[in-house]
Amino acid sequence: MTGLPVSVPDVCVRVRLNSGACGPYAHIVADFEPPGPDGGLELLNAVPSARLPTEYLPALREGLLEGLGGVAAGVLLTDGTYHDVDSCELGYKIAGQQAARAALIGAGLLPPEAADSLRWATWPGRPRPRRRPPLREQ
Image (cartoon, rainbow, N blue to C red; front, side):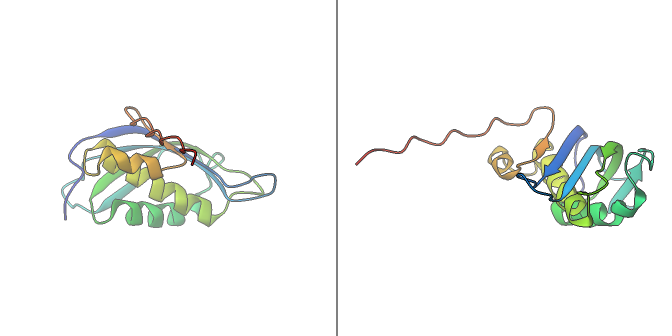
């Protein structure tokens, strides 16, 4: 199993699927670190449960594992929020996937172009989205 080679701090994901109606909401901020001696995923939560209820952590962990795709990492949750009505497991699973992919890009394990597919994730040094060429009139 490959491990994250460098730290990727301040990965922020805010999932908002509500376009005028209720939809999954999730918000996390995490620091990604190279793995400890045991490898795998180590998830530590420093966010009070009043801001991020622990019931969402299993879905977040599942998303992180999927997003990391076998890369070992230590993840420290430093902030997060939820919404009484709109938060659900799906939102936190998506947040975990996006955060993990962002960390892989930030660590150089995925190409910068992969950032174009991350709708809700930001991190220091995130590549700017590529501009699409204008449509040509025919």
